[in-house]
Length: 320
Image (cartoon, rainbow, N blue to C red; front, side):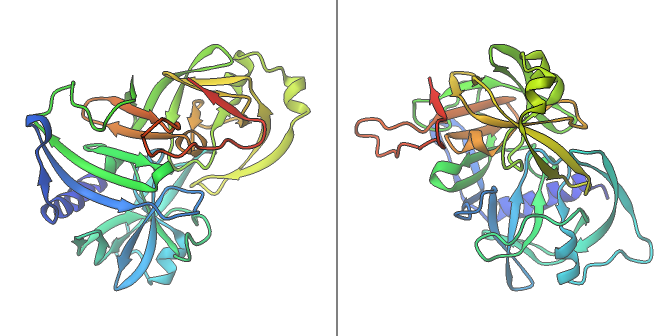
């Protein structure tokens, strides 16, 4: 059985446990309606395994779902006698990962008794006091509408049927941005300092990472990069990548513009810029995989809206 088939079975079990609503003549099944774990710095939800509370990362940048190395050790998950392996792609390259079987994984009202997942590198430190056991990747998410509302700490997973392209997933104001699904990734067009480029929407990236070639094309010179601070990043492949922290004039995604933000610049294995959690901090983003469309709602203070004004970090600004 393939990893993708197992992930579809997982979602089928979760759908069966949830109710349905029918807005505007179409049917929407709620697969997951969960709070995001607070103060995490990552996009994560709570789950249970063998009666114990754990954290699960929700990562659109990961092609396949995976168990953390520490999680496999803590729950004594080991490859069987007929061990299987698969390739995992990280920011630095490809790693060969063993596959283990996870039993009794609970998410919301759903419970799955048997799930085969590869073992990746260790994920971040505990989230809200919970050990990070696994991540859900594109194989888990790509048949659904996935709602990331980081400003309001909410995660939703929905299955829509008989809903046309004009479907409105939430109340205005919002705008839409089309995307392409390439090798499991959500790929969209953005602008960096006025230069057009493509980027992967990566909810597992704590911050946006600009591919070095994109930075050079946008006018950043090697000398400017050499003067920037250096930091290290580690991906699912356990490879450490050196990045330069550079300040850009603007990054535009549809109608949203981030001014004077610092982004990491690195040589990425994919050769494609990663749009990360710093964008999600200011925007509610619903990824409609079936429609190949992003619905983006900037979090702005509006009269009578009850929304909170998101405050950028020092000397960063955003505009519409």
